Length: 113
Image 1 (tube, rainbow, N blue to C red):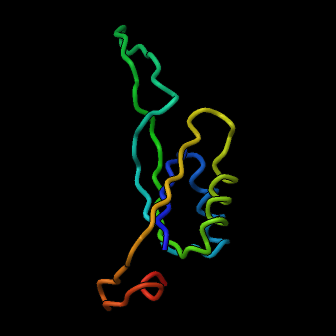
Image 2: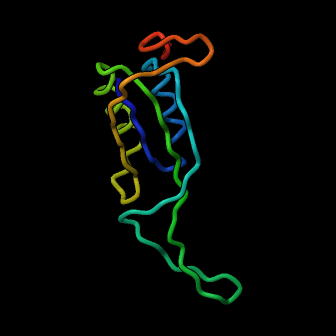
Image 3: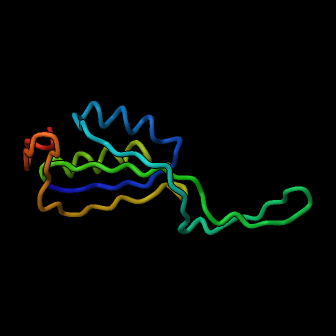
């Protein structure tokens, strides 16, 4: 199993969610986060005071999938979220050794369904 974490622009989330649903991905965890990378920061003025904005709002989408689904899930994320601009986000993939469903004690693939 693989865990896919995608940090994306907030405005790309609805399109991504629809495409993942079409692909058959059922379980998602979504968090509002803030961060920066190559975007660095930008300067703003509020009531005459200069300040620097160093973090940008992002959405973190996490899912655990079967190994054979990885290529299609990554392709969907790239298609739905790419604008060819700095700040489109990142995709992180890690290996999951085991998963347990707390309610029933099921493990592995059965715990993901």
